[in-house]
Image 1 (cartoon, rainbow, N blue to C red):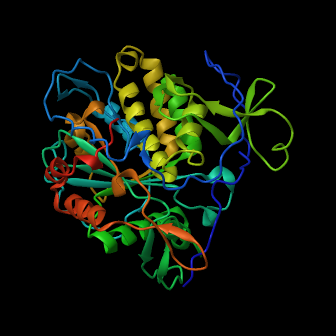
Image 2: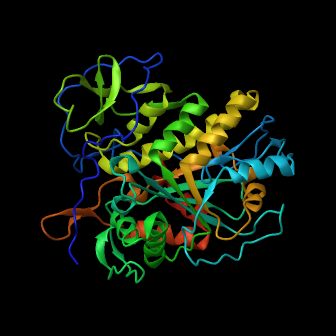
Length: 425
């Protein structure tokens, strides 16, 4: 079957959304003409390709301040109270937090051998599939794709976590899906969600076909999955009071324009109606929800295109985790409650039949600073013509070896020998 092209970065209309009331302490400047799609170049994230890669973060245990909450990013809710590494909570709080998370069958009939008794940690390495979708562009659940595909890998030690991105334009074999009538074939992996959602498959069917596609390609069996809606993600960041991010390469937004001092989504009706593209200047600062999400979705005009976008989305997940474990959340129960409510609406979760409380105990040792960002294809283009004059990304043999290390629970050792696959931040 030939590749079907869908332009997911086209202007969008946020149905029912309202523009932000303004920007806190932020200065925007009009950018020049936006460049076209990024092409393979001689730099990686602003550094020459021959520059030695950053060292692998040193694994260490450290003292952590008492926290009221730790955000389980992959589950979309603040689920526990932690003091000195010990879980201190009540059945009332557990029930309240777990009930705020929407659940669905996202990994299908997958089985896990990692179940433990309630209140006890699971055993072995864990792999969680994270899928980012944007349903603001359409109200039809059967017409959305997975713009973001991340594997959250937690080694058997349960004291660290890795975020491994799969490029959305990776050209892969998507297996047949008898439930929806899809016969299988070569596609960009972002299309797997689309085909799984057809004929009543919905979000569950879309996620299941993505999981099957990755398993067929890599052998990775998922222990859980979560679908993250970008619009809901914005509300989580707003509930946190914003996040801190560093812009490593200036870029103009293709989704947002500043009109009369207010950010507005680009639509067919207003894209020629004045204003200037939102411009993200190089440097570190505080981001509001809408702009953190918008910045993390940019790929045009960046040196490594979608690979830079993958890295920025990984950084956003890490920034949210850091913010949620900060003392600001610890001392503000009202903010904690707002975060819980917002997260419960932003995520759909599947724990593979394992009680959520088991994951809570298992992941209490993973701190935000332990999130290590892993770059598929070492973060650079690996493009090829795939038919009909269209270009797609190929998963390199070395990247496939890296994904097999995820499957085998040996990723930490593999990265020690391949430090160029670790992002600097």
